[in-house]
Amino acid sequence: MWKYSLLFVLLHFVTGGIVRRCSTSSFADPSQQLQVSIIVSSVPKDKVARRLILSWDNASPVDGEWIGLFNEEPSSSSVPLFVVQPQSSSGWVETNSHETASPSHDLGYIKRCLGFWVAYVSADNSTVVASSCLQTEPTWMSDLEAELSPLLLRQIFLPGTHDTGAYEEYNSSSESNLIVKYTITQEDDILSQLINGVRYLDIRAAYYPDTDEVWFVNHGLIRIHPLQSVFDDVRTFLQNTNEIVILDFHGFPVGFGSGLAVHEKLLELLKNEFGDFAAPSSLTWNVQLGDIWSTKRRLLLTYNDGAMVERSEILWPAVSHQWGDVQTLDNLYKYLSGVMNNPPNDKGWSAMAELTPTTLQVITDELGGLRRMSEMVNQNVTTWYRGIWGQTVNIVAADFFRGTRLVEAAIDWNQIRAQQLACSIQ
Image (tube, rainbow, N blue to C red; front, side):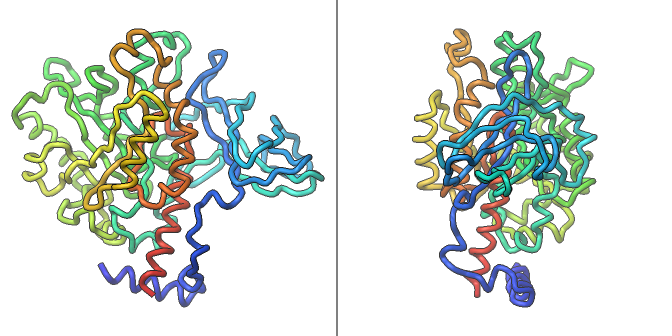
């Protein structure tokens, strides 16, 4: 394991990299730099989904400065689709534009812009002060492999999705259906989630022996998609990238009973599907990322049944869900604040950054559905984990993750963590 630390230090001394620039200021909150981003809203408007939101951080606005949305890379001749004049150092503003969904297989495995750009423009219209685009992140970990290799698995910040398999494209004809409103947690299929930067997948597997298709991914008791679709998307992604992925079988809501017989069937299926990709659990959460990459086995199969974990070398202990079961933003903050003040440090764990309705709230539709509930918290979740919480969190799982900037936060904080580690071993 030490070889990655030594290699990392030598490499950066030779190349003039981050090791020589160790200082307190190097470890600043990522949001200290002016940044602009595009976010995809979870809430449709006028029966149109994927509405675009402009976000900015750490601005010092003066009269005449503006932020624009563009359909081309911004230049002095570009005409914005939408303009807002910032009145505060940070903000989120809904635009009148929306993204058109692309089939996941068309997104590709090279980072690219998806047709929209945002720019912070100076008062005299002469300078683009900051800009970015709505973009994919299929290779962010392997792009940073040299920097991230010395980090332990439990030291990495991974963006994740809650109830990953409960995805469905918005359909206006079913938007008032209570089951749909309180079951669907993601807009994008799993391959698209991975291509857009997610590296932790929260799966609830179910078994229906009396149907033609016996394995499903569920949200609670609700059957969503065949489990094979999850396997196909994960395998496709692993075959086309060098990324590390956690596939967490966290719940078994239907068909497993009290014994291990059905679990054994699922284990055999996992061996058949992922035998060439599954990392051995003997590596433990104290493994350096570089050692995972060197094994060529980049899929961690975590499993929420201790007896099964003991029976197989490819099943890892389940990721510990730090879940508040709360219904308000204030209570979510209080719960997660407690977690962040005393985080687990000896295993993989996830901050479950979403609201959970009570049964009565579902029946009365008090909170408007999971799409609206995610919009109630996702801006704040972004702020919390782009801030100091991002320095120590392991995994953050969200509903409708593209309504956050968690992928961006993870990339920024992981580079800072790598820099801190390099400085500590000088």
